[in-house]
Length: 326
Image 1 (tube, one colour):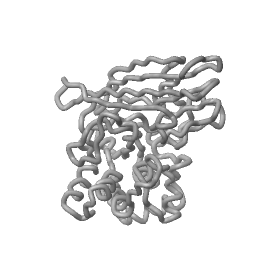
Image 2: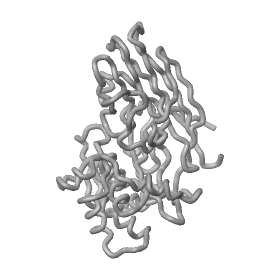
Image 3: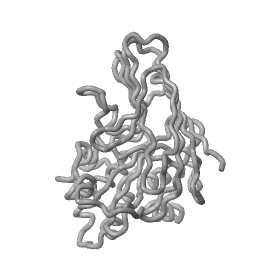
């Protein structure tokens, strides 16, 4: 289709130094919103693999299990194909039901909507009444008051309440865009993070793209539902990323233009996995959760515990992406 691009994402995982039973969960690309379609999936594994969904969000995950007697390295290779087109403006579709609206407005463990989160949202909105104006005020406040901290592990933790209570609004995408989502929910909007990974170079700024080895290119974004319009894409975190990594002033022409594009637009050199906050891994057993409150990285449990998903040199995985020519 005109304007669409197709990508192939290959994930390879090896749990070599892990005798005994093991389990692995890999997030899979979603089909969503008329802008992204998962077109094919295949895998080869030395264990037993199956596609599962988490009970709360329905996020698709490839779960692999190795039994205690399994001999040799525990390996899997997964190949996904995904088609996507750039987003500009809200994604229209079926009207949101009352149940859906309530679901995407509710508080979660990492994204509360009361106390300081609600107080901050209402203070920022002030006397504005139009939904788009209220949302724009929240977006501009997040862009103006946050900063990117390159020392934060991975994509950050997304602990909205702690950020506001400490006054430390620095972090990475899960922090900054998580704050955007939390404030929007506290203001009465249906909102969600979308966790994914960059898969191709950017036409906007070099640091907003990745290709080839994308093992460390995870990135989350935000969507907020506007009545009569649909899901509006946002990404204040990438504004702050460009300010830091390109050493550009926040009030400079290039950043101002990017700020406008990312209020209602996503460049789809990125693939979204899911919107599962505080996810419970299907079949993991009591007390077993990912290192983070979301599933944006491979997650494994072995007899020795949970390998660190941020250390591909220790937890051996590699994710590669390439664009498929028409």
